[in-house]
Each structure stands twice: as structure tokens, then as C-alpha cells.
Image (cartoon, rainbow, N blue to C red; front, side, top):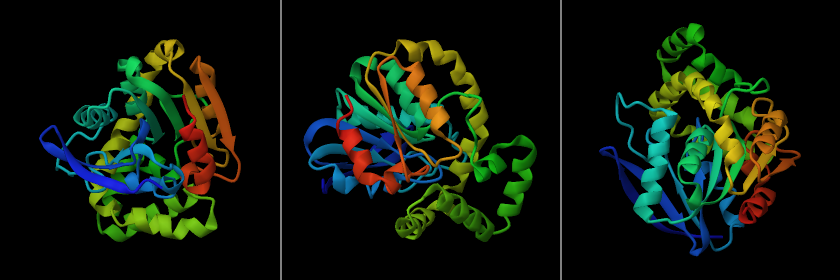
Length: 280
């Protein structure tokens, strides 16, 4: 297991990103979380990565990174967060590992700098609107224009409702009964502070997936290896979404893991780690 050998802060747009670096061997793995979580989403995966150099960080608004009030938490700005971390650490080539909402920023960065991408790994994530893409119930509640104002007003009367919705939704993301409680508790501790980022990213969600459709031709021309790893029991970012990724990228391979849901790195950490380590 790579022990955390360095914890640092990286400047980004006048704010600070929390970054953790472990291990020393191989092309660095850059692990990215989605929403509504943080870098601790990968805690179960880390023991299976050996001495591989691993970089994981919290996007602005999440975890231990700064949470500036009024900041535009968008997929485009998440791409800027990723670029800031890679450039600050002086990483020439990377394996990008994206989950959930980090799919658009990871893919956007990869399309900008394909020569710096040793491999792109997609874990139960999304990029553009497709017929098979489904929003999880709580994400749909907070991102649908006619519903989100009322839902947020109700949740804003106290953190208890928002917390209960969070526990319910994140609990549904995990199939492993043994891990569900500890993981939900670990991630939930930070959620109240991260609510502004969560709501703003929900505002940005529909625009993100619609505008990325115009980049489909770029995906078809992307030359680096792409490994698609999805838990088959995810009803939202489901196997049909995974197969669509595998069809679009010319050098993609597809791995659908049984007994795993949306948090595939939690439900199947050992197998996911094997696939991540051999990507590219």
C-alpha cells in the first residue's frame, strides 16, 4: 500500500486545493472524485495500488479544499483544478482516473493534452447526453429546474433533511453491505460544508452533458488507451453508458464488474486496482 508521503496545497484561482501524493513508481495515477464525495472515495482502493505513484485531490468546494462563497463550481472550473494539480506537481504524463462528475473535466483535459495522457480510466462516469444516461434520484431532484428551487429551500431549513437524503442516495451507490456504513459516514461528514458546490454543479449538469455532444468527433480521434470500468449494478451510469464509451474511443477496452454499483472502487477495490494499474 502506498503510504501518504506528502500532503500539500496547490494554488488555484486565488484559492487552495488539498492534494495527497503517495508512492513513487510508474506513471502517476491521478484519482478524481465526483459528487457528492471527496478524495476519500478511493480509500478502499489505495491498499491495492502497491508502490505506484498516486495523486488524489479534492476539487474546490469539496473535502479539505477551499470552499469560496459564490464561486462558479462548474465542470469547466474542475478542469482548471485538475490542470493546476498536474502542472504544480510537474507531471509530464499521467493516467487519469475519473469517476462520476469528474468525467467531463478529465476527458476535456485529455482532449487538450493527448500527448500527456498515458491512459484514461473511466469509472461509472459520464460525459455527454445519451439515451441511456440516467440521473440518480437525488441528483435529478436537485438538477431539474422546476424541482430544484423547492427542494433546496426545503433542505435549507436545516441540514437534517439534506443529510438524510445524502445518506440514502450514497447508500444506494454501494452494494457491499460491510462497507456501506463506514463509507457513507466518512463521506457524509463533509457534505454540509460542500452543499454550495453540490448545488452549483447540479445547476451546471444539464448544460455540461448537452454541450459535450459536440465533442463526440474528438472522442473518436483520441489516440491514447481508454479503459472503461463500470459496476454493472449502477442503474444511472449503467452498462449501456459504459458500452457507449467503449464504442466511441478507438483504443478502448470495456470491463463490467459484477457485484458492484456506482462506487465500483468501493465494491470491488482489488479488481478495480488491477485494472487501473494495467491501463495503458
